[in-house]
Amino acid sequence: DKLKKSLAKTKESINEKFNTVLKTFKKIDDDLFDELEEVLITSDLGVNTSMDIIEKLRQAAKEKKLRDSYELKSELNKIMSDILTEGSGSKIELQGTPAVIMVIGVNGVGKTTSIGKIANMYRNQGKSVLIAAADTFRAAAIEQLEVWSERAGVDIIKQQEGSDPAAVIYDAVNAAKSRNIDILLCDTAGRLHNKKNLMEELKKIYKILNRELPNSSKEVLLVLDATTGQNAVQQAIQFKEAADITGIILTKLDGTAKGGIVLAIKNDYDIPVKFIGVGEKIDDIEPFDPVEFVNAIID
Ligand code: GDP
Image 1: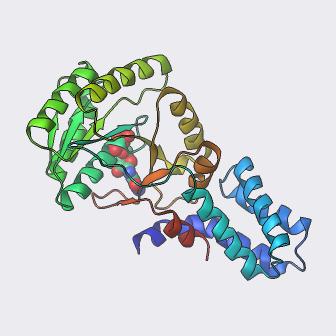
Image 2: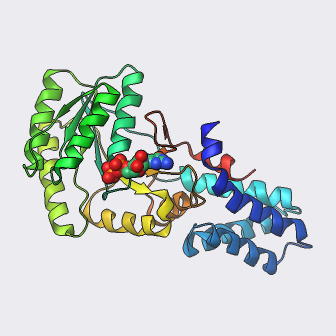
Image 3: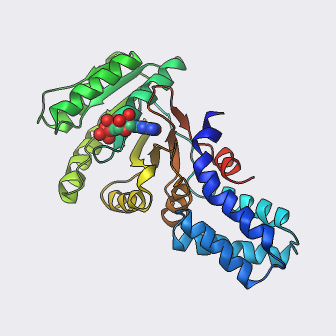
């Protein structure tokens, strides 16, 4: 299927390298664990997460008396699944009418495309969706979002370039309430070069949302480009300081070998991935399923 295909390169990076190491090993010893740790580090899991995983594997090997590469790999699969399912989960909260999904992220990561795909996905599920164009910094961004809202067949609330994002949100909330909308998708700012401004902007938006929609869930999803690997991890850290991120939309997983950052972001910062982008077309998005993901990169 599409997920497996998209993760083929990540699998090649992790699974094939594991197989190479496991094929030649003689006994389960420190050298073997060092080599396996190296595989994880070179597969973009980050040093810290790679060390955590191998430490857990080392303990499990001792306690459960694992003997062969088959048992080691199935234990590794379990350790990775546990990391992705413990703590904050990947489930998308959709409470209230409308439920709110805010989307943030820097230019070029795939923010506009993802909003269009998500709008389309929920619309196909029979839900009503409204998009708020509250990233008002660039006129081109608003126009692009309009193109995607048309593709998805959902309405968009916008004002002109440079207008107050909070005012756009206020308009959109009122429109959503009066139209009985299920999901309000808000495109919000992506400028990280001024963290203080971003924080202020989001705070204002939060205030309106909490006042006007006290009973609605509010997802704050950060869009990250998987092809940038450890840079994406750095962006997650920086955005986390400025906003209460509830999850990640990881784009461009198709064709990259760096899918392992999913584990680094979850293990080190407890931010779950909630959606994955697997192509440029409107259908190329999936809610993130941790177990499917791990099964697709290790067999
Ligand atoms: P924005 O500036 O963050 O709003 O980014 P856009 O939504 O305009 O996307 C930037 C580029 O990334 C476009 O060429 C998209 O087609 C591409 N893109 C977005 N998501 C994906 C994805 O999941 N896979 C691939 N292959 N390309 C994507």
